[in-house]
Image (cartoon, rainbow, N blue to C red; front, side, top):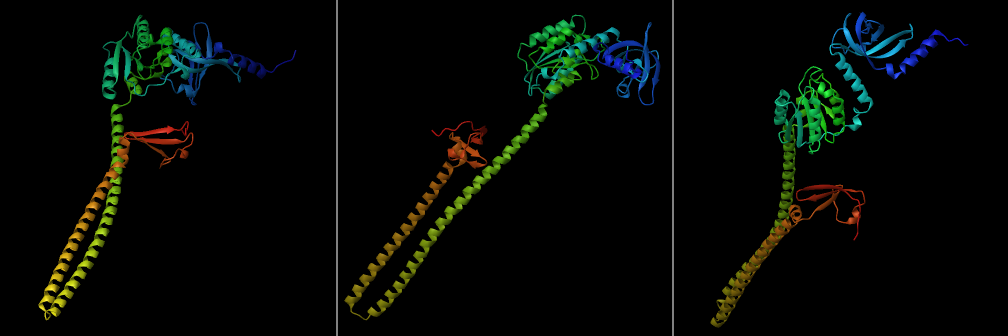
Length: 439
């Protein structure tokens, strides 16, 4: 027979214990003796009862979470893993949690049920439903006329008053309370609520025991409606908390976790409204600037045409004045001529003057007509400007397709899977091209 070393034997036994699920993560109750609080932060002690004793160690990381200071004589309940310390070959418990044994059997039942349901997957995150973003219809299961109900109502009124909140008073303590909660949950789950709140104020483990019912755990697990629990105080955890889609530390916190703050939403909406107003003003200013530039351009052309006519009129007037001067000279020369010649000359002069007046009148009429035509042209241009204004076009039911900041005029400029913007009178559609037809 081959001999084994002591280390090999102890190491083998340790391996057997470490992989035995029956003695790992177990709950043990007993009395503390030989307690030592080591300077390293580790706790060394024994657990004993009337017939047996076992050595224990609780390392610093777990010991720092204790809510009390252990001492010899304390009756405690611990959660621990069983193993062998190879250096001494000594069997001992490696304690991860410890509580004063003031709750006795209930705490043991709680831990055992919690482990079994966890192993069955009831606490897994993949089974939890997504929280509604803006819940409109919420069912609240809470004690009738309780402080928790009052707190929840106050929080809803302050934070999210737009939601419809239906209160279903339930028993939250006593032998019949778990069944009452189960019956009410099954009823409201068929009423198309966006969310369910299951809440209760703080209390001892006995007071909260209704929420550690295994039947209730499976009902919560199988609900179709999102459910959040707000049971007890922040340090209180029940089986219902682990199974629910979301756990809140208090009843009030359950409202805060599933509702947006209406005042924050109002502020965000106001910010968007102000931004849209600024963009609208900028757009209007740009359009007015374009119209003013066009008007200046048209006006400039009219003034140039009018100036040319005025120049021509001045030239003609200068010619007329020169001609009149020549006539005067001619009259002076003809004064010495015969009376018949003078009459004939005067008659000719009168004809010339009449013709000049007629020409002047025609010129003035022509200038008036040019001015009238130009004004009419400006009015037509203004009508065209209004007709081609983008807002007027959109208001008649048309849309504008934009890709990469450019207006699309031809279907060949678009490819399948391109991202485009479709601008309408009251907003913009963002779309992706799935198919193109040239028909």
